[in-house]
Image (cartoon, rainbow, N blue to C red; front, top):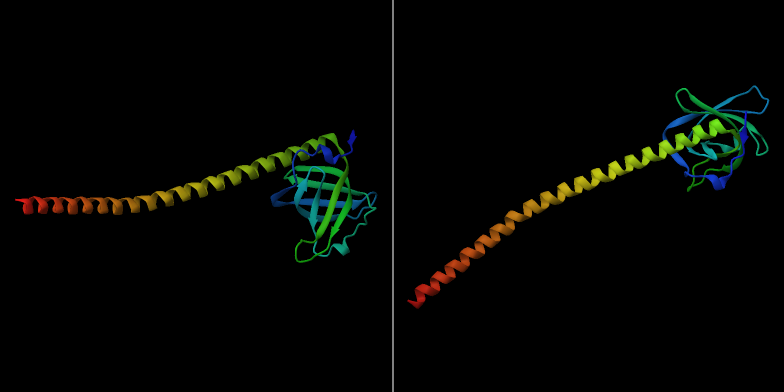
Length: 176
């Protein structure tokens, strides 16, 4: 099995947030104790675990972890990772633990990148669809407003024509 070291400069897709949480199983290398967690924030170089009390995380920054990440039903990948950052709760950030992929085989790396690409494209399609729906709703609203305004303009023009015609006929009558 060929192992690949992940290089940040090779990242093609940014970190993405998935709609449904992804299941994560973790343990220290050689340990039989597995921890089950979830993530919604992934990239091709790692992921972020929302963790209410990050100080109670069962691993240290020096721990090498064995990680199984379930991308979809029946689609689980394996890699080794390390804790890279602990984010404690405050008013501006959500608490959690950042995990970096330190070793992954080429097949799992390809699967992860394809999943991220598919997620990015899906998110873009949803945003485009939402933007198109908003634009369509705006144009319908503008068209309704214009249709409502048009009869008023037509009525004003018609009443101006009548008043001009009345003035012209008065002038003719006065001239005669």
